[in-house]
Length: 263
Length: 151
Image (cartoon, rainbow over all chains, first blue to last red; front, side, top):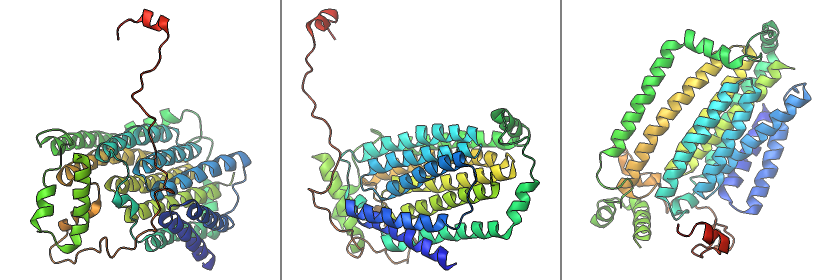
C-alpha cells in the first residue's frame, strides 16, 4: 500500500510541476517524476506475455497519457485542444487493441472529427487573440493534482489487488475464446447484438440526439443579431457597481477583453 | 497472452485518464477546456469498459461505450450552445465570470487576489504561435497569366 502511495505522490508531483511551471525546466522535472511514478507502477504489474501486443499497448498508452497531461497543462487553449485530439488518437489505438474496432473508428469520427473541431471553432471565434489572462492562472495546482492522482491510484490499487487475489485468472480461463470479440466478423457481430438485444435503446438514443440538436438550436437561436455579436451587458455590469468586490477581478478582465475586441 | 494482466493494464490507463481529466476540470478556468476535460474522463471510462469487454469476451461493454459516445455527442451540442450563450452575455470564456450564479447565502469563492498565481513567465521566454506575414502578392509566371487572364 505504501508503494501505491509513493506512485500517487510522484505522479501528483509530476502533474503539479507541469501545471504550475510552464517552462522547459518545469516540464523536464514533470517528465522525471512521471517516469519514476510509472516505473513504480509497472513494477507491480504482471507482464502481458506477448511482445508485439505489449509494444503497441505501451506506445498507445504513453501517447495517450502524455497528450492528456499536455492538454491539461498547456497555457494556450488552441494547443490544449490539439493535444486533446492527440489524446483521442491514442485512445482509439487502445480501443483497437482491445478488439473494439468499431468503437475505435467511432471515437475518431465523433470525437476527433466532430466534437473537437466544433469546439476549436468556438475557441477561435471567442478568443481570436489567442491567449487570455484566465488561461495563465491555474487553480490550486498542488491540491488538485494530489486529489486526482490519489483517486487514480486508488482505482489502480483495487485492480492490482483483484489480480493478486486470483479470481480474475479463474474467470479468464473459464472463457471460450474461439468466438466472440477478437474473432473476424467483428462489426457484423456487434451489429447483430445491437439490433437484437438493444434495439429499443438504440431508437431512444436516436431520439435523444434529435432532441439535443433541436434544443441546442433553440438555446442559441433565440437572440437577435450575429452569432457572436458584441457583448451587451459587459459595460453596464462593470460600471453599475452591483457586483461584490470579489467579482471585480473577472469583470475587469471582461472589460479588458471587450476593450481589446472593440479596438 | 495473460488476459487478466491485459485487463489490469487497461484499467490503469483508464483510471489515470479519469484522474488527469479531473485535474483539468478542477484546475483550468477556460470553459471549453473544462468541457474537454470531462470528455477526457469519459474516454477513460470507455477504455476501461473496452478492457472488460475483451476480458469477458462479451460485446456488452462495447455497446455501452457506443451509447456513451452518442450521449456525449448530444451533451456536446447542448454544452456548446450554453457556452455560446454565456460568451454572448459576458464576452469571456472565464468560468469565474459567473460566480454570481451560486446559491444565495454561500460565501464568494476565492478569486484573483487570494489565488496562488503561477510564476510569471516573461514575454521573451513565452513562445506564442505567429502567423506568416500576409498581403504580399505572389509572383506568377507569364504563362499562368496567359492561361487565366482574370480571376
